[in-house]
Image 1 (tube, helix red, strand yellow):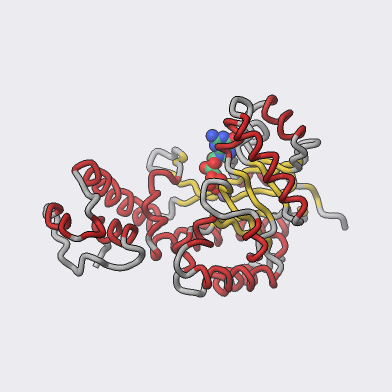
Image 2 (cartoon, protein in one colour; image 1 turned 180 degrees about the vertical axis):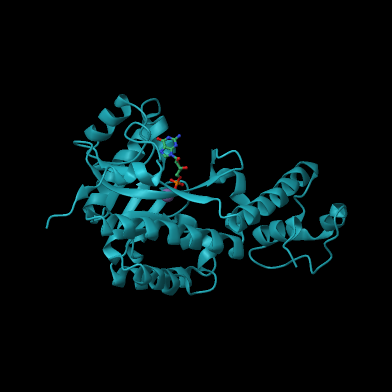
Length: 308
Ligand code: G
Ligand code: MN
């Protein structure tokens, strides 16, 4: 049966277990209050639960109607602005051909089935783009794809990704994977580590997204097969007004380079920020100052012909 919002919320709060035991009847939300693990439900959350159902329904519709479109945001070398790769970002086209952001289907990324179907669609479309560009004689740049923590739950994430890659005949070193700190800290993190090791062996680079927003320590990162950390844009936004944000950017950059991790800074929006980042010796970045996420055709225009 289709997942209901209480089921989803309970799963999130109770750490992957269905704490409700099927007592889930619309309108009986008061009944849940007696279960210790979800005592925090209140009127406000009911509103957000309703919103969750809407998001899940919308996500199913977008998948079925084939409305998903990958956008690409360049990653640049800060010293000269050269494009060194892209991040593939989920976008979808509504009935009026307007491009929409994934924030409207955020809840789908907590649901294994939906998150996996969305990711599969994204991968197939990104790989199709890459294989077309390759066939046109262009030199591919590495493209990173994002994985939500739930996607690792069935322990076949890496196998499926590698199978798709080989179907499209795309070299593994042209693909990168972005995971969040959350993926490494949750239950089932051993699945994640197994998947990452398999992908890394195949030549896929691993990035840690939104770094600094979770709880992982830089030193613990050495235990994981991570090649790059992406400093969350929240720090870049604050670093020119908040000395502690600046100190964090500096520290991550220094420690990263001393333990042979690439460090990418997210969310550069203006020259002042770029100057600060260069001063901090940051090497690579991403952000609206350089490029906004763009459609495939525009990304293609940034590629160069491969040497014969
Ligand atoms: O979590 P992750 O870093 O993968 O999120 C990427 C999102 O951040 C994309 O939706 C993209 O549009 C957005 N983004 C990328 N660069 C910038 C930026 O410079 N400023 C802001 N505000 N958002 C950005
Ligand atoms: Mn990302």
